[in-house]
Image (cartoon, rainbow, N blue to C red):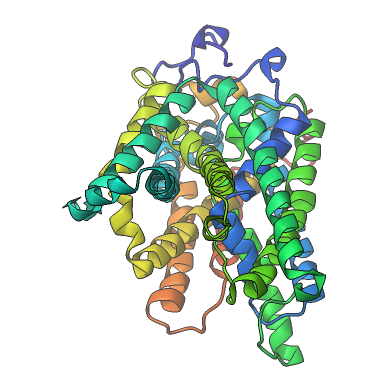
Length: 489
């Protein structure tokens, strides 16, 4: 899919390989549908289902939640277009784009931070998928329950078998490269939609339209509380997409054109996310009447249907959905990030293999068993990722004025634009450190120490602080493009 280093004469082998090199224009094959399908794979997951339903539990009326959804996903759509544009125009992945603001060597720091988050969640999502596989195994082979009597590293033998099965199955798909990944995610999103529509139809048949209410909470909020809750819902939507707000360029680099990328983003974010959220609410609200209590796990709802093959269809579909989000949010980024650390020795496929192995080493089932650990991890690393987004966007649009010299992204020569201070942009890294400390401090005060009232401002604070500090630092140092510099075509 990518050009070789020979297409960039003088490129330093420490900075380039076939997967990190710019994708030639004639090899950018992703249509609007491919981008749309990528977002379907990201949203149509068990986690996405639970997240969408949770927004309707804030105590808001149905129209208030939908308005917050429209505003939040609209903001995400704009931000994705911002972060995706330079990678689409130059055909470069996230770790290479990070060289523009962090330096050709400093970008490794950004890659490591994003890679760690992806690796941990890759393991967690694989574990979630393996639980659905275990359910299927027990449906057809009840004797397999005997394997649950023995545990190794706090996971029973049935769990280990299903986890390693999912780990290997995913790896076989992912190792075939980005074109196979594109074809797989083209299938995942629509497949989940089909099952979700069938599930919604079954729920409506059992519960009737009278049981459906767009507000799932019995809370009664004052007008002031409603405004705060709506603001919280908007920020939750933005935060949900925090990881891809950083490395969407890993996918947009393959888009045929900026127009195709923008159209795919619009279809996959505002339209798709809101439609999926409405389906989720119908199913979740209907489950309360059908089963006597509200169920927010679609796999659990499917498992309660009195038809073995319906259980199989639903479970397999949500396994596929989990694999889809694992590709989009948790596999591609670490694969590129690890390849960026050792370009001469590690390509995309080897990087993916290393990321997969590390995802087992972190023992995600232990991690998931500690809700506080998950909360702190998400909060802290989300606060670290946000300043990176702020710095990269401010640098490209306000400092560099959309001017990127592609060849200089792959050279260690002191004359290269992105060599900065020995390959490190000290001002960029200082901006990340300061804004990251601000954002992490806010999150710890909110989530861990409860010094501040619970809120969802961490990502916004980190992104804004990162952009502002970086912009001021670069202007004071005289490292900005002259006023009136035209944007790149």
